[in-house]
Length: 324
Image (cartoon, rainbow, N blue to C red; front, top):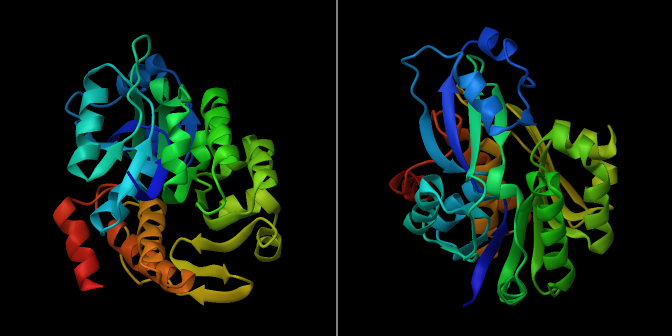
């Protein structure tokens, strides 16, 4: 079967809590950043919440969030991710199907749990994450992945995929064996991840130039320094650097542009970068220019930050595109 976009990413069930900053400060998490922790660490953190705290539960992971957007916008999507044989794994796979995403991997871990990400949103919409990667960081490579990749228009992945040895080697193996007729898209994910795993990013860039790179300003600086507009041009043919509520910087085949952010009241930044990439990828598949694609991404991200969720409902995605 042929696909528009094949994702390779972490499969995480997101449990989101809205808390005061003092609660985050009472944990050993990195404020407004991602940190990999154990399942027991998660349980210890949750024990410090009020007894009546109930999370918003979403089947997430950065790549999955992007695929959910682009699939509901009309692209034909598939996903390579690793689940466990447990209730969260079943929940996750059912959610992929509901969003029109084909699950490629049919192997399920027995000895570890499906990954879970605790997301703590503070009043200024900052996002702090404590993530138990579990099965999601133990991707088992399968040669069948290569055939699917070579029959897809775009291979898309996330920086979080580089944080485990198994996942990185699986992705690198897929990338090296995928024909260049399949374009490569990459989201940098998190400045801390970029800093900690910079050598792995460089290894990917040595394999091939990225066709479509998505990142925010902090991630870009972590990767290449302050002169990121010039330096990213040696890594990517097309890239966009978002900057929260400020202007985004974009280069398309050597041509520089800027995109003004929409003036909205953000209540939750979780998922903004994911829907930006998903929206842009959908327009790229529809053969729009990278600039036009990112303008749609900018519009979509302005909508998600007004929601208390990293994802929209299927109907909301369809309405968003119809209204654009």
